Length: 161
Image (cartoon, rainbow, N blue to C red):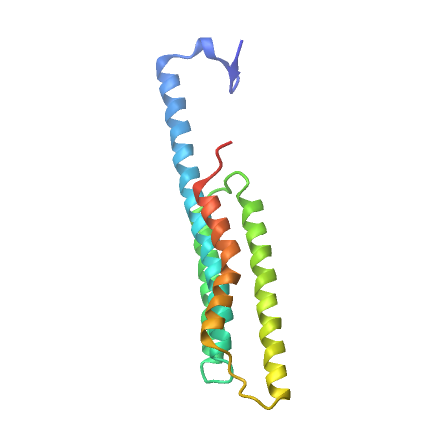
């Protein structure tokens, strides 16, 4: 005999069955909304990090350096607040996927920072102009954002299991 929530399925009235089905459908809609929010937030965090990598190098040594940092921090806080308030739960495997994407983005972000610092130091030693090619900065930012954007897509689509 199969039981669900302590009641035998043979003892269900049609009204009870409709109520359980309605609760299950509502929970499924909530999970779909949570997947959407977590997926968008994960991709958004990646885009913010990649954008900051690019813009911080472009604004280095200018009057825009501090406002860029403040805007970056404010956007991170706002995105975090939105994500935490708009969801009730984490969809299945979403945390693992999000943290894996974050790890990849952090590794690529730091590789970009170290590479640009090294290149800048080498140019200073050779007494060359210290500016970096903007196209290279944009490509580095896009590459750094890619793992979290892909993780966001995976979370948004959900799992089939």
